[in-house]
Image (cartoon, rainbow, N blue to C red):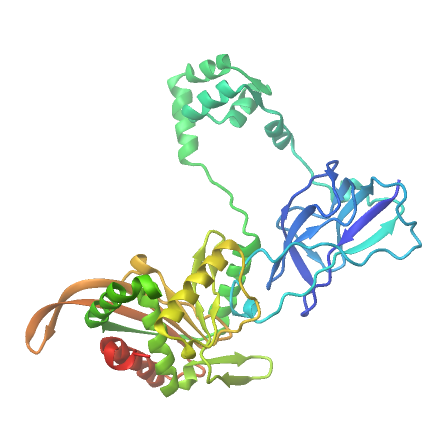
Length: 430
């Protein structure tokens, strides 16, 4: 029987290895042509690999979470079609690949276009030994897959928070009935106490893989390679909030609603004109600092997969409503796994919204040199002209790369942003 081996594709951009994020097939399962077999990730993109042939999975190249080199065996498939080209004939070099499934993790991910990924397919006479490629399963894992119970038993077990898999292990049987549940419930107080203690002391192992692994890698590199300098300033946004509500009252139906973020973006764009040193990217290899006239703001966005930073390009050219619309569009694309991977941001805006706390110390999104963090708004008493007034206050917690941004320049930049936000009708009009 002939076999095809799908190898880890050469994605380019200097990528030498990929991580297996998820398998969509298992050994001995049938696979159809163009069916997804695995999801792999580099430090730039995540890609679903499909099979160019139909057959049966003979072996897998590793477990989810493992890292494989470019060119390594990913999946070996025993062919279903006996008329497939012989070994010495050239093999196809094109295979369907699903679209990129996530937005950028961080800035370097935004800086690369999506290449055309084609898994390398080679015909071979015999598959690698399954013992070296297939998943090894323990007796415990095999038992979990064999647990059998009627829907009524499963429903009752769920209502009693009984783990059928654990019960099957305890009873050393793979078919559970109501009698088994009764036996479990009739256990001694000592047994129940031991069970509660075990539940209290339980440790849940969570594999760090895929996007979370890339986030961890990015944050570690940024924190270790950049000497962070943080600066916090309180901003009186009372007038800004009044003006924002007035604009929404008059223009929300025609132009859309405005949140606080468009005003922050607009203020940052204006402040960058006076302080270009914060709107920059550092090329560590060339040891060159690139300062930009255009402002490409990365908007930190929380998704189910982790923190992503889609880029609002040329923000300095946009109106408040344009900014609001594009931020909403970027956030939706990031959460759905879309977005443009070509954009390079020059500065990052991070906001936790209502959970923003009082102070934060944001980590710079390398290779940028500055990040502005937004904390939550608080109504509090403030002394103005020797009078106590209730004002809406908000802190900006920002970090800068101290190699290139001096403390004075960082403070001046934030103070400029503060001036724009505290007198919005003077500075932030289009």
